[in-house]
Length: 246
Image (cartoon, rainbow, N blue to C red; front, side, top):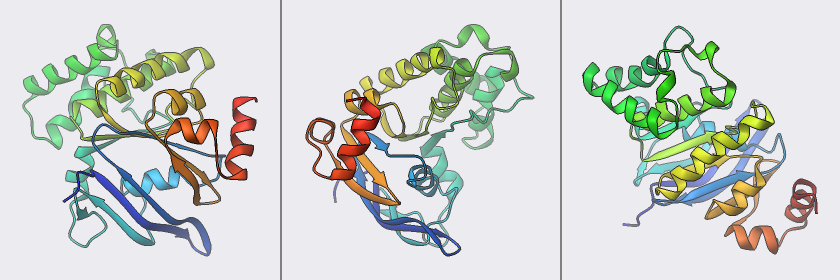
């Protein structure tokens, strides 16, 4: 038995006659930071939504510790408590405080007591620098702060893997750094992460695996050093030259 947490095998996704993903294959192992890069419309976010079962794959398999999550009878709620997701637009509950946002999943899904959930939430809010704002509502804090709360909320579920769907793309430029800093710290602590991102420096410097997608297929994947300094495919070279300003 291999040590893979997630194995994506021959994954395809169509919306009607439009095929968005075609024959996607890659593996995520404990401690991996995998960055998925590519132009807008290449299928990156759809791939992540399939991995979290927000979209149902049209074909192929997704294995979580060897168990097929697309199989009939699989429990998606239990799975999502192990595979957390941080969304582009935060998806916080506006009618709850920062602290309540980080407690609600623990109480409802993990069945923790409120005292236990609060203690755990505070630990992760402190980790992302948001402990001073526990009584604020999402509308009272900045976008960067909201995204840090969203990360704390996902961490409070103590997942095995964290999925990030373009976590900085809705932020003002000066707020991008504070979110990337939290993500870099998580990577340094050994958190397993699957990140859809346009932040090329993060993909190059923090990831240990990069997947480059174009038109719904994986054009190239491998070690960031190889992909960024010596890409094999013309499309990868063109994309990186455009994004890295070389």
